[in-house]
Image 1: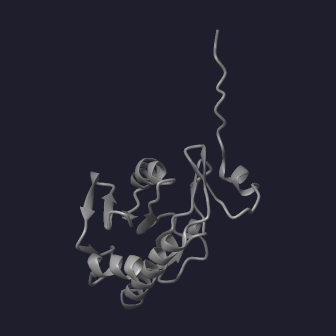
Image 2: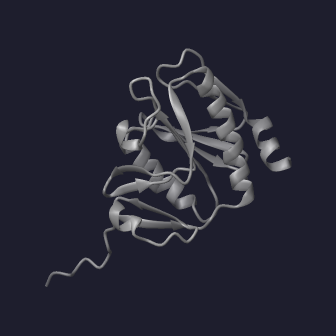
Length: 187
């Protein structure tokens, strides 16, 4: 006797039909993930990081920094909303939509107890398989950033300084993590 598959496979189109209730809905390999609205600390962390990355991209015009909610749809089975991401330019212009470029230079998530498994397992795997150049997990409790790349299966743990140089940039972005976390957490 063949057992039926009781686990539902979601698509990006089905996700788009869900109510706009303040939650974030994402589909990773057909599995639906629902995340509640982020905390103020989470939003402070993303807002500051967005300013830092966007200012850098003003000096090194290789991409555009976008923060959630904004869709990144790799396929019908893979539709996510990273807290922050960088789209490469399309013919030296900002893309109108993700599908104009189809890839990311950077994806960033701020981890929380409710998102840790998704961020550290499902999304890390997804971003590696989709060849996202870098994936950063911001851990406010530990005051670290976990950096992952497609070439390295284990994340690099950074607690003092993060240096990022996307393809096409002449110079690097250097973030003093002690200062970053102090500004976000300690005010």
